[in-house]
Amino acid sequence: MKESHIDKDHFRGCLIGGATGDAHGYHVREGCKDLISDNTQMSIFTVDGLVWADDRAKRRRIYAYTTCLFYSYQKWYYTQTGNLADKDYKFILGGSVLEHDELFARRGAGETGLNALGNSIKNAYGTLDRPVNNAATCGCVMRVAPIGMYFADDAEMAFRIGRESAALTHGHETATLSAGYFAALVSYLMQGKDLMDAVEASLALLDGTPGGAAVSAGIERAVALARKKKLAVRAAIETIGEGFVAPEAVAIATCIALRFEHDFEGAINAAMDFDGNTDTIAPLCGNLVGSIVGILEIPPKWVLELELAELIIYGADILLERVREHLRDETAP
Image (tube, rainbow, N blue to C red):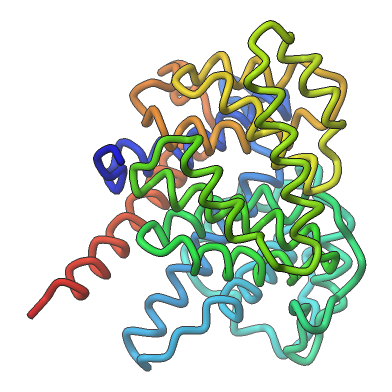
């Protein structure tokens, strides 16, 4: 076990890493800025939901993470459509996150997520026991890194809330398990585990869950391919798949991160150099390798030219603040 990564360098590295990977994968530039896609937009709303739940718990001493994430994703739905899914959701329209015009831009928003949120009326939303659809696509995975950060001291909770957050828009068990795996993986990295140790610990959480064997098999195959140093990274990736479904996306990101564990730029370049879903794989790799190397190892030019970089850094810092508060509360006499 290395030193804990519960610090500004690594928290910022995770979120900015994901966002810079997203901007490179999305590959759209406006003026002097590299634009983010819906991947980073939804990660920002994940931060919003977690902080909302944390604030609510301080007032009422009741945690409602998944409910607050649902309403934060409804905020994102509003930014993308200009409509509320239900007129009774007007209460969500407050909060500073909606003051950023960039979050109202349509940046490749997935129809699966939009449809699921748009159909979630009367406070009824998708759960693990009541799937909203049968979608297994990757849109539920690219937004869960903040969950792993918030539960940096509790990977099992990160796994659980990662799954529940995914179920809000994606109903297939392999999609929710992939999201849980990825959230737990980030949590273990923040605890200071080496990447391979973190992968193995996250795989252990899949054991015995319905659908877990299928997700684990893909990740274990990715690990084996990553260890074949003579095999070109692109060939390894394309052996796994294109990354449009959630299990393939987390497997490919795991494979690339293992090959480029301490090389952020190399990881992002590899994530973009294959015929597949680069605009999801690049931010996932950015989350993982950014969690390992920290923000100081991300090319400064990438950070300076990133859209909404200040807001993303603020999100990382406020999550860190909440984690430190929890850790102080746990150790208080």
